[in-house]
Length: 530
View 1 (cartoon, rainbow, N blue to C red):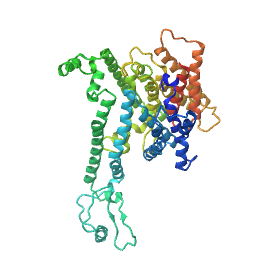
View 2 (view 1 turned 45 degrees about the vertical axis):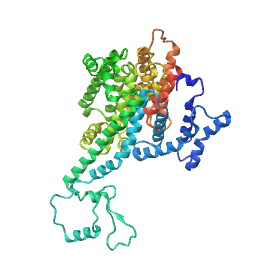
View 3 (view 1 turned 180 degrees about the vertical axis):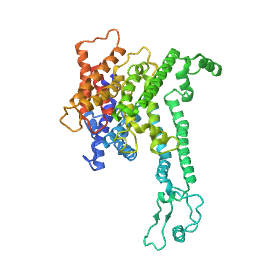
View 4 (view 1 turned 30 degrees about the vertical axis):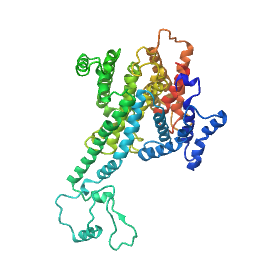
């Protein structure tokens, strides 16, 4: 939502109203057809009040938002429940649909391609294969057939020959033997379970199948990136430049050896010739090197003291790391930070797919690394959500702020000379400082509980408020200009953000606070024009 849209007919209001009504819990409106009609009520009201066709958005397209939301929520429920609650799943569906229809900046287009294109492609090509691998991994090794066990009992031989029709031999996990035992009174065929099929395999056959499943998944991901995502991103986000050629220039064009190589191969082409690109690329290399150093030091620290601290404290170390990584360095090049966090989200999702799918050879190593940091919620379903929600809470500030920036304000990848908005770091301050302070103080010193469910304490909320105020003050000082003031009104605004965030964190218990608190804080920061 840009400032221009706030002064005119906002094209996003209508779709937001429709998606909000589509997100109502099914318990309120059990019948889908009635829910669809209610969701389209804003379209009818607009047509009656304006007495003219909708010129801002296509009414026919908007009328299909409710069924799209319903289908997407159903797919996400199938994949993510109970790791995510129903409310979180509906929120995720709403966010993905908004990204699908309104992504306009190059960074948002890349994010849309990765989440929608990569996600749908992986779902279509790999879902069944991953299920087969999980079923095979669940078979205890002692139940697998031993190699060379050719002599079987007469009773087992008769049972096997009676179950296998002559001429039928299928090796497909998707359609295992549909056979009717002799003497059965059942009218239809009775399928043999996958577990029974897998127990007929030897250890070597099971190992080869797991390897084949893994190669299929990894190969599919590579094909999706090269065949689908690469041309789409190049055409719609990078002005026709191949992403694999654009990315080295985006990071290395400040290096003389790379510039000489580009001039030798293709003189006058590439990102290197853009004005100011060399210094901007050198800054990106410094930022990326700084991030890697902080990550290495943080992981080494938490590994060294792993046995001496509780799970909650271990997790809060990573909250502190995101503050060090993004509170100040993240606003030096917001477009690069946006891109880096979006790609990190894609990597996190892919790694957790490998872990949950038990795909060798990486799934075991990922599970071992995550095991000391998981809590009860991470064990509820197939997805370890803690690190993903932490990353989402950080990136919300960049996603929302860049989405509210006009695409006509110059080069979308060059932010030199622009005023940096404090809203960029609102999410980092909330999840990195506020949430960590509330948890650490509330668990140890929280005695005065709020009067509602959730177990949050007044002491924890106060710690959240003070931590957010401190973080916003540092961020405001860093991004401020020479004319910046620190009047009592400014301090009152900063306090209002901290108080609002602490109340949202204390009150909202049905969804993960790493998501809703940064959203609420971002809205207040932008509204108060901090």
